[in-house]
Length: 239
Image (cartoon, rainbow, N blue to C red):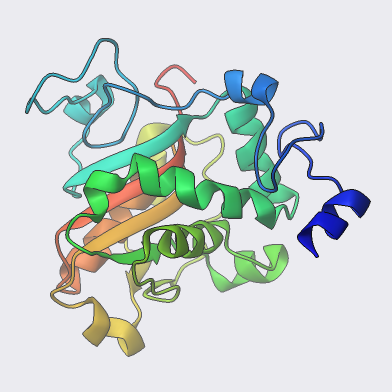
């Protein structure tokens, strides 16, 4: 059946639409234009760093030296540039759920160290107004794909965004953090599943870290911990 489907609908690259050999993949050209994070990276946000990882040494980027991070550890699959940016925007604004399916195994590999203690995988929540307009939460799609790829439990409604915060686009770093103050809380119906549990927070993009911070603080207040984070893409400091 799969062979027949491929004969009628050949697999296409998620980045450019060129034909590829397998479903949910990208072609060699798009792969080379996707800034995946390999090698040395910041242990708090996953941003790629120059050089090689030193044995046992924890590397921290300039952003994470400047901004206190309430979470314990973090990773990112790629930087928000090139085909990486195109994939994120396709997932977020073009209803391309197949990108999340492809990203599941990528996130499982990038976040292997974050999965070691069998955490509960939790997506960053959307406010109900944003969810109604978009019809889906892209972070939840990524969390589900990561859970399936890693064999871990996930809880799509562990967190609630009780206040409509609007877009973070165009806000400076301080305004991003102020905008998220007290906006996220643990869902009271899911509190028992969160308390005392290690949690891996999932989002599509990390820029300043304000959203991850608000969600982490809500989880810690709800008795969870340790909390770690993973994003599909990390925005570079000068972006």
